[in-house]
Length: 130
Image (tube, rainbow, N blue to C red; front, side, top):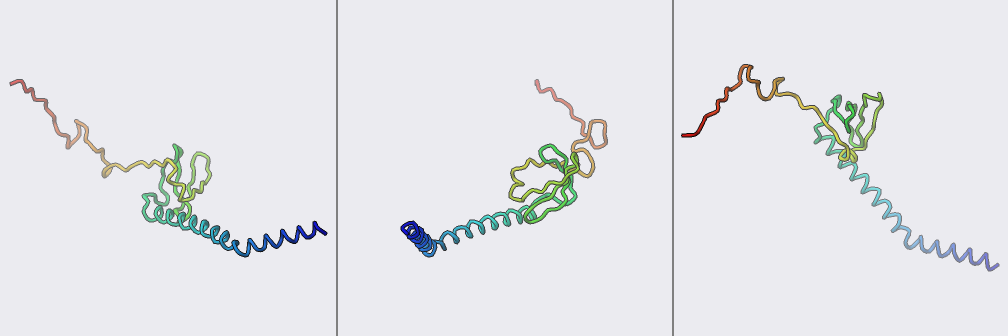
């Protein structure tokens, strides 16, 4: 009988604690969950609208050639050409990746013309001993 009373007393104490303080635990859990969802959504929007990454663009992720398949709000999908696989990365984790892009040449021409090409400027050294 004492064992049964102890079990009933424990149940009443747990029920009283959950009734009085349970809503705080649930509210804290929901708040943390909402904060993470909101944070990931905000980072996804920044990547989606403010990024220089575009669909079908070829780039290098940690030295591996990849193609952007889809830029979403919550995740980005890449096709890795060396293994013929796709990689899904949450937008919040993109800042931790090493991403490289080849830059286009200026109008398809070298930045500085070589000496033998049209548009090259001849440079002469001036001896300033006077």
